[in-house]
Image (tube, rainbow, N blue to C red):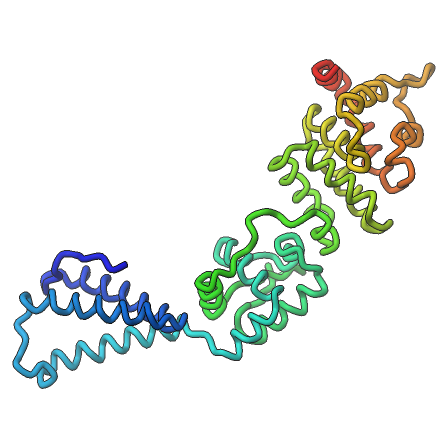
Length: 335
């Protein structure tokens, strides 16, 4: 909506120029979006603004015979052309972007990074697109001039992606058309199938544990473990073992309990906490070492059939050994 502002006199040229650029941007945006009604409305607003300036302007009888008026008109056209040049995207480019969901997902996600720059290896984590499909899409976006690809450093093997000016223009259009990224994170299984690196997968799990709680995140992980194949389970278990080292005692118990309950929601958390306490107190009579991973795993029928889970159960075992006193305090809250 057009907002009336004080009459702009010649003695305030900076303010007049700023207002002109603002209105020119609105005009170019609506031209690109093809908003006919908005353009009609803008024409009325500009005419009203033009009328407001008449009293403060010493116009000649025939303005177009005045060189100053002609100069101002061509200056305005030059400014609008420059703005349009930065905003308008060729239809051939738009067609390629709109026909690929992966393309606008990558562009929108990059636009949320500082400066529109990100390491290419982070794309699976950020977009939930498998790296093979992502690499093909990135190459297409690079070929049509929406992305630039650079080495991270002179001796680095990593590559970074950067939005070009045309890329930013496409992002603006995607926002104008209401194409946005989902606010909620997609299911974890989507990220797992995108095959990000183990540290990136562990980082995403940590964010989910913080956002939704360790127990809820663990339940989702347990369900994925039950339904995925050997390779995916192994990757997930390695990421989980990485995360267990970063969780506090209470979160570790809730996290692991949620994993076990993921396969059977009827199991009560209270029962799981007691079971974990029993396991944490289990020692060999002579060596006083903690229960072997194989024995520990067999205590949970839901996980015993997956040998890949030994990797994070061993990590849990190590945590219990190092923080036995802290765990004992936490267990007492649930019993």
